[in-house]
Length: 135
Image 1: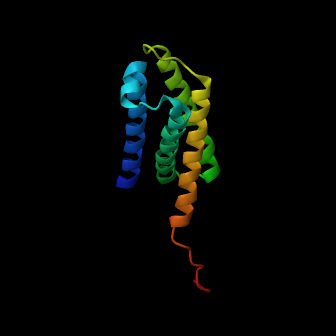
Image 2: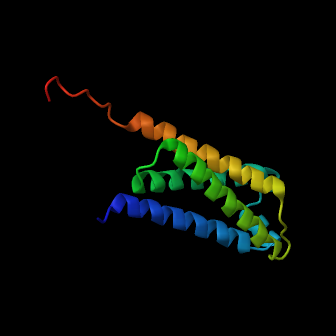
Image 3: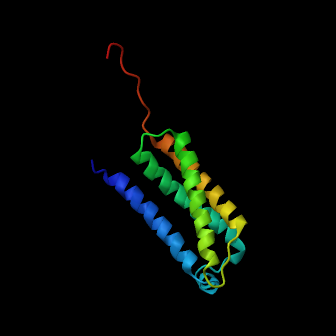
């Protein structure tokens, strides 16, 4: 069955991952021209991966009948591994380097994004009414 909401969520995940890959392909000087906030480096990593956590949580929630615990654990693992691959990618980009503290910010941001989606998803769901007796 084709679910447009699910498909859009996975498209958002792919666009997010592609944007991270593109930004990691830029040299340090190019990044400074686009994002002149070097002192906010960890906050930017955290925020970018929090956004990734939100879109990944949506895609997982709307694709699988998983518990929230499974979504949070597997989503955090996936985002953390993507953060590792991102840091390795930067080792091969001129004027860039791998940084464990960036990876930690990525992982924490991804976890927070997943939890934010869980929090708001629960609050925006219509309240379930109990079935009437005899139904």
